[in-house]
Image 1 (cartoon, rainbow over the protein chains, first blue to last red):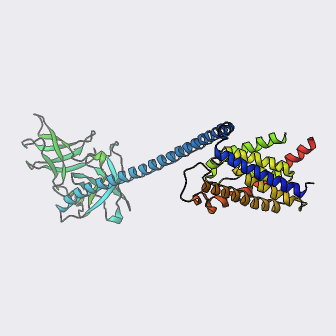
Image 2: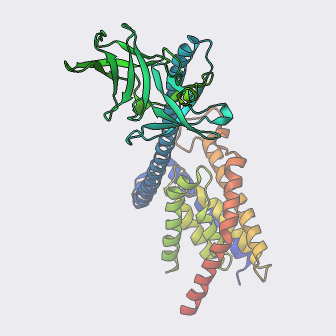
Image 3: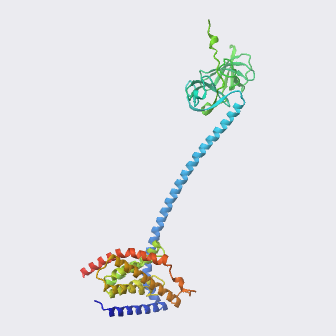
Length: 279
Length: 173
């Protein structure tokens, strides 16, 4: 058991020793000794500090790297979104240009009624070259209605459902249209060929056929309205023994990239079959 | 042997207090040397406590710009506070240890900052004279209170560990 007096003596002695120590140390007398004693402690502190800084630095680097990776991922995501938007906008611009041309074309025929339609499927590799559009009876589309673009005749509606219609292209091998050369006004029949081109046959032997001349619908037969562009004369052929001429015609329409078409809803095909019946 | 243990424990604490803890905690750090000293002094005799206070204070002062002995005074006050109360108390409880830690922290920091201010005014710190030595006074909210909080958190595990070490030490002797 410590006596209070002893404790008090120890306390005062300690305080006095501290005071002397502070005074001596502050005077600088113990400077070399202090530096010597502090050296290992400072060395240890330096090691601990370096380790801490290295660990924290690597942690920060790892955090920075993770943040950068996250940032790159965000940028890539934003870039993908922008790219998607750009693709959408380009699509809109492209549709706008096509529709503007179609409107220009339609405005030239104020008396006709048109309805625009998207091409939703095609089977251009088969003999029966057809496309399917997203308009049907609900939009007053009927069988036999002509389908056009600003570049000319696409074909005719051959089947129709409530919200879709199948269109036989003018290049179909079973398509037969009455045509007329724009310059000479010579008339003939335009049929499809396997290669996607057309042939105009039954042209009079004396008819002048110019390469590059436009071929228009004649309106004969009542299946199509007159003066729709069918195509352009690509080459001609005339046999000495034959009584007629033929011309190879190329459509101005790229059927492989057909996206928007117009149906002439104001045209109704004339049924001439009644005149073909014999008593 | 006990003094070697004190040097080892308190030396490690002083090194950590001067190197690692400021990097982790900033300006206000846990006073590890004080916490270990208090935990030891609760069940030690006054002379051993004084020896620990001198060792811990010297180690701290060697790692600071203050003259040797500056940190010892506050630690001595803590030791004699515990020693004085020890004769009145028969059982140590958590609230008492926390109370000792709180009062001891304020005593130690008060003595330390008081001495620093006095020495600064007397020009004993070796720094160029300041217009007012009050510049050395710390902001209680940013230094004293966080240190007090850290010490209160650390004192119980430190006391538990030191107490186990002391019991093992006594059995081996």
